[in-house]
Amino acid sequence: MRIPPIQWQVTSDKTRFKVVVAGRRFGKTHLALYDAFLKAISNPGQRIWFIAPTYRQAKNIAWVVLKNIVYDEPRFLNKINEAELYIVLFNGSRIELKGADNEDSLRGVGLNHVVLDEFAFMKKEAWIEVIRPALTDKKGSALFIGTPDGFGYFYELYQKGRIEQDEFRSWHFKSIESPFLDPLEIEAARKELDERTFRQEYEASFETATGRIYYAFDRKENNAVQTIHKDVRIIITVDFNVSPMCWLIVQNIKGLDFVMEELVRRNTNTEEMAKILGDLYGYDRPFMFYGDYSGTFRSTKSPSTDYDIIRQILPNSDFRVKPNPSVVDRVNSTNSRLCSASGQRRLFLNTNKCPELTKDLEQVIWKEGKREIDKTNIERTHSSDALGYYIDYEYSLKGKPNVSHKF
Image: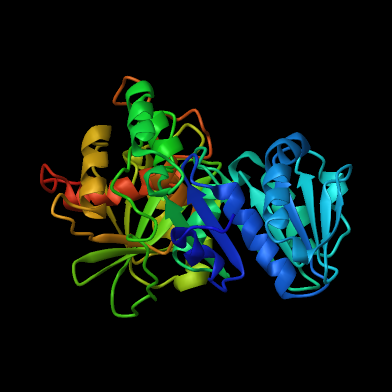
């Protein structure tokens, strides 16, 4: 019942928080429980939990696997409790099986280690509000493991581990890498399933329901941490939606664009955002604004346009605005900067300081069967729209505009 060599790279790693994304039948549950068993026998008095999405899943799947592991090493076993699904080892360490469907039963216990199996199907709050605090006193560790299911919190943790942020580290395994699966079975599944389902279930690929728009974006490859250069002009890209309103802070350095930070506020207005920008970078600093053409319109409520208001507060601002391009052209230009056909990346962002833009680039999708952006999720598209106005103006695949709006 030992684990195969490909899984040892996870078990032998000393990172505190591990995230394993793997395809079906990779042996995820066995890996997680064997890893927990090794931790339990290596240190006396350990309290370790294995948590499945439901208690029934823990009982029907994980309990048999755990008993097989300990039966294979009987010298370490002290007690098995079939009714409450826990084992006690010779050194007082204890491994218990739980279900995330009863959050109250998970509260109030200090833990040395926890496994969250099929974490994509658990609530984010189960980790943040219940499990993470339980690890604090003992500086405990955690293993998140499962198959992808959309762009949820499991995806967020996986991406955090890819850049080894906040004591996280990630691994990715396809089903074909499993020593437990016959390759012919995988090929049979490929013939039966649609492409998206096969990628998600057997290649452990995070998938959206329909086509992802900014397919060239990769959270790791397009991530870069840059500080503001005092001698380089600050570019501001704006989306004037009221809630949220999104402004991005950009600088072009040696031909590469870096999104340094995002300003995202709800129930706000252009005047307030301009003052926030002035407080951060200076009211007299020269800014170059790119944004939505609708910002040039006056309304019945005010004789001033959005750009007029900005200039009143930030007097050294210039503006580059053109009538809104076609959505497809804007998207194609952005994808080209994110990663060209030759593999060159010329657009980067600080994913830690730009969480909304990061989510947009990963999650904004086309309407099914149309070349229109799906805006049913009111939280999405605003940051990527703001970025797109700048990219399309400066790098449109159709060339720069001959004339921009005058102010």
